[in-house]
Amino acid sequence: MNSTLPAVAKLISNQSKQALMSDAQNVKITPSEPIFLETSLAKGIAGFFVWTALFLTCQQIYRHLRWYTNPAEQRWIVRILFIVPIYATYSWISLLFFNSESYYVYFFTVRDCYEAFVIYSFLSLCYEYLGGESNIMSEIRGKPIRSSCLFGTCCLIGRNYTIGFLRFCKQATLQFCIVKPIMAFVIIFLQAFGHYRDGDWSPNGGYLYVIIINNISVSLALYGLFLFYFATRDLLTPFDPVLKFCTVKTVIFVSFWQGVGLAILEKAEVISPIIDSSNGMKTSTGTVSAGYQNFLICIEMFFAAVALRYAFPHRVYTQECVTNSTGRSVTMQSISSSLKETMNPRDIMTDAIHNFHPQYQQYTQYTSEVTSKLPYEKL
Image (cartoon, rainbow, N blue to C red):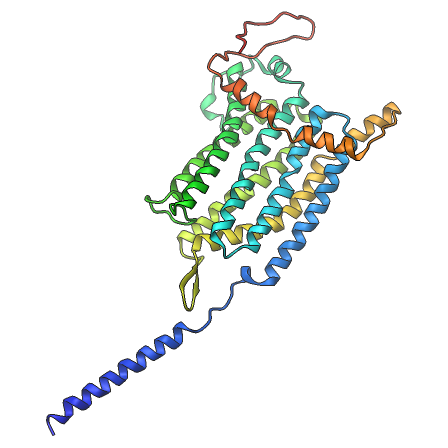
């Protein structure tokens, strides 16, 4: 009897373990519910906003190219407008490939590189509005820099506007055009060797260092743009700078701080990974966070397209032809040629070499009546 009890107890224990293991297996094989980003509804909503934004923006780009009467200004405007098609298209494609972590990173890099291009294009457009570097310096040179905590000029109290100040603003934006593509290739390289994963804040991975470098670079670019606007906002008043500045900055700022906010939610474990019932982790937390970012950008690009139509209207350039009573015959070939000329990045590379060259000392200064030049070292 005594020998039978332990055997019965052992049998019951084994049966209990088997039952628990069976329950665990039953729980494990339970299919997980798809999150909103994986549904056709999410992709359909994003697609509707994306295609509407594409229609509005492409129509506006066509009209600027149709009335390409001021290439010096419209070249930069068309470049700025292209942020909507690029952001919207790549974000929607990334959302379609939501569960493919190896694909969306490549879409992100192309989209983010154009962000740097837009910041530089907007600064260059302001230069064109004001007649170039020499005219700007003739207006602000020697004036004291006003203190403003909002525009970050508190540390510049007692200083005057100089050539160095204007050069810093240009260099601050140009460095972002250089750093961003380099970091994009670094991400692709690290991704190929398994050292990059969104949301991986480990010091052994590349995500942390890429985020730090990109944030420093974009912050410096935005600071340079803020300084330039603060120094020339009175001169830019006839060109309605507030709407243009706020529109461009909102498009870039919203996506930037939106990504930061999602990264915080990800770190606080508010955003969870998608767990597959049979294979363990299916989609990492970083990919889920990037998916929400893409979905929000798809919707936001519709509002950006509407805002850009009012910020950069094409009627300003059609009125010039109407006033001068000049007919203008435009073919698709001429529009295509204007588009190729507009998107040629050669001027950016030339400007970058010019501004970062070690022998570059100061801008050439002109006056409206005197043709003499100040000392200038040619490259």
